[in-house]
Image 1 (cartoon, rainbow, N blue to C red):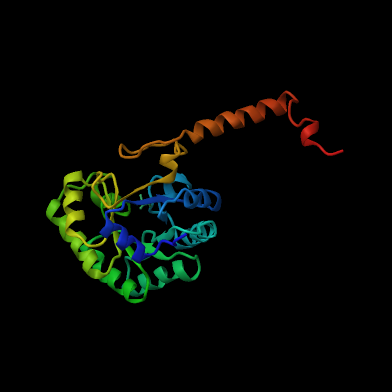
Image 2 (cartoon, protein in one colour; image 1 turned 45 degrees about the vertical axis):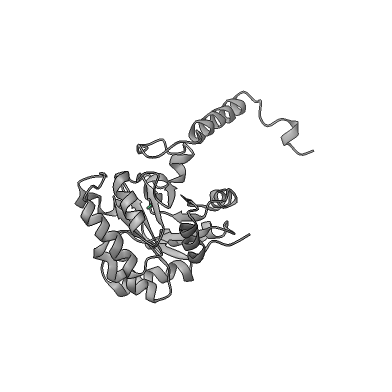
Length: 262
Ligand code: KIV
């Protein structure tokens, strides 16, 4: 089993091998995702919305991210674990960004961090990478800037997106997430970069794809974006199981002798 590293991901792009990525937020799912052969497991700040029930990712804290990253890392043997830097953990100063990025590796067992932004965070990416911490950038629809973007909207400014992608690569990012970008623009970005692009709502031509685990498994009963494909209906299955348990206890059908001690 080859452990996924930045070198392996670079080689996969060079060989034209697609990279798979998913989010995870806890030990049991991290283990299942890892054993499915996914290459990158992102402990996304999307946990604010799909685990904590918030309406945006903005309230998520560093301590919460460290906690979730640690329990995910414990379940992963092969994939690269990436810790997502939450809102205001890297924006206020470069030195605070480096310190917080370091916590993901030192305290939580991540092998890399992700942060949102393009040219505007290039200096921050450079400083984190200079500290020996692999950084994944994230451009296009960046959920932490939801208020500045006027909502969760597809981003279409081609020149700016190409410039952002080039700047984060030059700053030392090992990869870049492209979110909510028309496929023709993502295709140009992917062709213009030497680092792998990982798309979400960015078309099929990215070097890899990422989805939010709860969207893929049908665990998220809230809004599911157009780009997210549901491969299972786990919320429906869970509701059926829970209803059955309640019914059986009420009707004295559970527990039986089989579930009792002599
Ligand atoms: O927080 C997250 O889950 C993400 C992915 C959607 C890329 O940033």
